[in-house]
Image 1: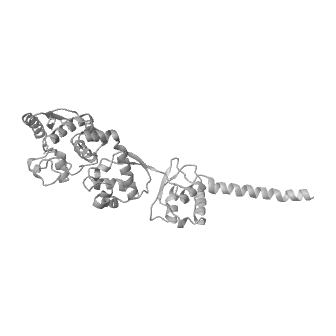
Image 2: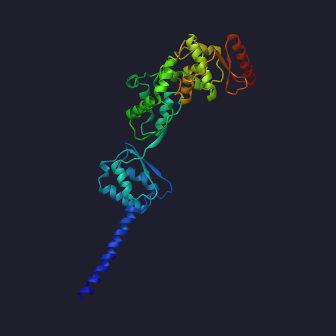
Image 3: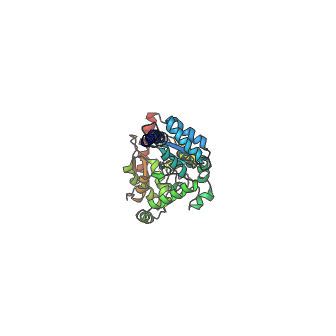
Length: 341
């Protein structure tokens, strides 16, 4: 009788345990996400426990979400919300996601530094990809105090940025971002590149300045070392660079199709028609190909160049001014025939 009586209680108890285990698994270990691909949750400084929950709900199953809410509310998460970019992967349960959020175990992201023409443009692009807002980034890049901290001024600061793709955390601070960019700059300027720059009697930011002009002169990578050689020849002979892209930069009119003589008198330190030598700094974030084109410039005797009349994006080069005038006449005629003003 006693054995039968104990069996009578053991069976319901076992069923109860199974139900508890099943419900625990259902609420805490079943997939939170209903999506087939990873969803990224962005938590910024203004987020609270409730706003974090509301950001997850649209991609979550109701039952697993209930389990996650229970964990967050009973673990004091409201007092320790951590910013960051968190991955919510298919198959991950409430327990796993809760641990990530509680411990700040965020996912890094791939950040591409663009070949931006202005620091405002660079700030706007980065502001859309990072937690730092664009106004904060822009203010820093136009601050002499901030720039000097890294060895630049407000004109040379574009030279710090090397356009590449980097693994970085979405919630990186402004100081963290600039320190990382300086670290990547120093890594890029290895002993080989530094030695090549020194051989040209140029500093790294002067190389970046010349490269930025060449980038704007042509998108033809193969021709860039040729153009670099021409500008280096002019620098060595104390001739003004007379680079049209510097006029566009000075005027902030990047869409100009023709540079008329009246524009060549633009009052700006970036006007390389009236000022000898390099401008105060890069006129854009120089490309790696542009920088390497300067460091591996072709040696020749050309001092002039003019866009080809076939609009191929390449140039006719000349050793003498008379020859250059002939090339310029051909290009001007082609512009007139196409009605380009």
